[in-house]
Length: 352
Length: 232
Image (cartoon, rainbow over all chains, first blue to last red; front, side):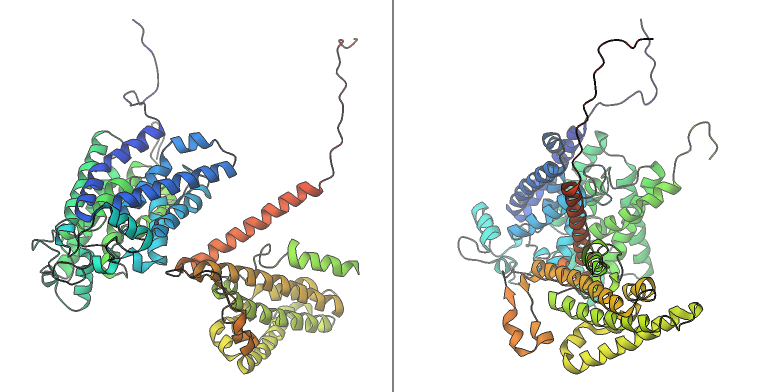
């Protein structure tokens, strides 16, 4: 019998970049299905459009940079970026929105910095921030959950709405945004935000139709978050992602939200509300865990995640935008070199 | 005459204050939301630059070396005040649109830089021309960046030309396309940074291409292949 000698790690899975990226894409499926179930076909159309744009942009720029195009496409990183961005966009946003956003993500955020592995910022989230800052009206046009909407729509309605601005029966986006009670519905985050700003208490804002219980669970929105949590746990089980970043981000959200609601009870959202609204679950497992733009040391990952959770709640509570995961991620991306510098692990045999 | 040719080349391209020296970035990035805003500030800077270069060149032999910088700054401040008052009188709306950035021309390093580096060492005629061409180089970049941001942001070019040139210039505005919503990123400061980076990258590409184009062709050197071993 022969003993082969090799250095650690000994127990490892051989996966190339393309496989890892594809696994992350597959893990998104439960969430995407849930989103489609609750918010209609728009999400799938946005994702398809984003993927097409991403692949075309990536191929063009790789060609311009005289790189190996087919290898660059086959690592699926552009597809994953497009998927993550497509998930974040309002399902019935006009087509040029997703095209501009994806182009920006791939061309400027990723390729101008040197391509896969060299980008300082998370491409999907930077593209999202660009769109949110540039087109605030379209980016906040979220629909009510399908079962609570006044007008429902099918696949072809969604297609024609995205490309022409009207459904086949002639409704526009503003009409589709009406809920069953005939009032334009906002996202849960929006509802609480505007409620708090107009002087209501947190528990009063929860009585809006969008929340189905008084502890901050919103029908549809929170179910989608739960589906992403499931996908994320699968990724964790497959060891595609480390536990440090997602759990420390969730911990950051819990600590900050808990502290704020102790500080000013009924003036800020509860912990459950913060965890299961908006992009926190999705962000914790699919965005923060980006291996390129995140911290690379174990301790650094914990600090990185904690601070993202912290900023998310702080910006949600005191900032100008209802959701803040994208902003928090971009802010912390800037801090990554600093975090990595101070958390370099001790090499065995050396003094710290 | 060769000196003037060299100055032109330096000011407009090789040593462009905005693209190569990266001087005066604050007004460059803040004001260029439209081509006309850029043109307005560019012209103001150009006037100040010509005036200060002439004055500095005239007094260059009387200024004690130790206190030259305060004196230059005072000269520049005087010209900025003149330009500001003129703009206040004749192009009031543009004066309001540019706001704090007109008095801030005083702090534009491109101006003190030219006074120190060129005008304080050279005769009046050359200094005046240097100020003019450096100002023109700066103004061209301002107009180009402003036009780019205006075009991407709101699909128009030269909107508000009447603020600078009088009522007849309303017709100069070209609306190339009408976006459903303005692309705010291009109009906000990040757009200025990204646009500026792209312009500098474009200039660098053109420089490398030109260098390659004009490079003297290498003569082919035929190396003799030795087939036999060296005799020892």
